[in-house]
Length: 509
Image (cartoon, rainbow, N blue to C red; front, side, top):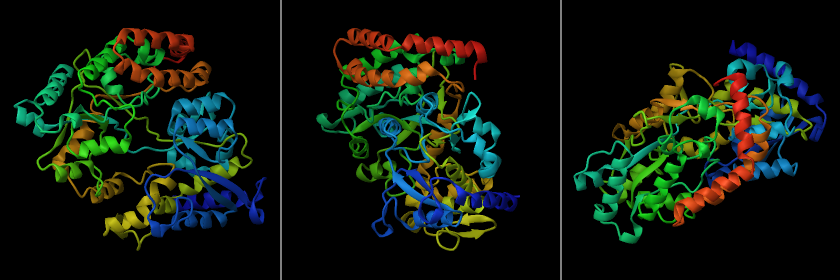
């Protein structure tokens, strides 16, 4: 079956040579966005010019497509600017559904669905119609959604060695967490210099959208709210009962010195440095933040720097009903689209189709057989993980923009186990289980939400401005009231009305 679809894909791709707007030698010139996910080793070249980008370019050239990689940042601002200035590549992507919806609502995206029958048979076969609907607005295929294999998001972790030194048990709710944070500050079980001690470290500087799921403290926030899928879809977090209490709680922790003082200005690297140097007692981070399977592992470096130091996963944010709920990702990581200014949307679809042909997908996931891996009993076997990282792993995720190809659980599990060279006493498995238990997904709007798409970015900017002020300024109530006033003035009630109308028409998605 794979061979059949490969043949269909090849026949479709061969027609790319007649595309308009071609480049050199009659080929269709396709500019593809690429984002750096790992540092490129010096002997491998650059992000846009290395053995693997050359491999893809050579293969696509055989099919009539001249691929040119365009490095772009992954931030919302950079995406908005590139679309507004007509500098977006012919094939671009964003992880933010709100941003994708805005681009679609503004009329800035091609309908890719019309090209799937001829140029994208693999896309339909591999991803499936149900998954493709995540890239549709009002039934129009404005984006191809990538596939995500693990949809767990965030977990909380606490220093067990500090708790043990203080004779404290593992906290199970917010009150017990607050008591532990106070004990960390007042009794300093790690003997950390006072100026360096951070009871709650790696505290996010980014409120995300506050009214959407990009918010990195979503799970702590949600613990203050009633679990109500209809309200999740038909309202916004800042006006939900409990949101003010959530922000007041964070404000109180900061005023007591329990949250890292420079959370708004410290970089990711600085915050991680505090963690690995043993200065932090509690964090709420991506479930796998501590557990990289390489020399950069936060957990391993902490153990080396501070013998006996250990973070363990904890559930400390039960909702009003006592259930620990966590938001999980939608089953897509990116929304891949072609801007309306592009003259080669067919080539963009053909490129994605090529990536999903099984042999190509295998190579982009595991490298070349005989070089990065061998095959035993139909499974890829990686003998030298460092060599894999140095010769291929650095670029795989940057190229594999359609995400996790579904090779099946036997293969994906075998690969994951080979890269799991450290078991972290099982804490990584427990963290993943905690992130998935009682988890739920964000609401998905699949119609043009004009108010949300067009006024949402302005609300994000307001949230970014007031997020720090509500936590750090002495007069919390004044800052919170001003925040809500600004949000209302910028159109929050209109967005709520729109969401309620959608809920009434379509029900809970």
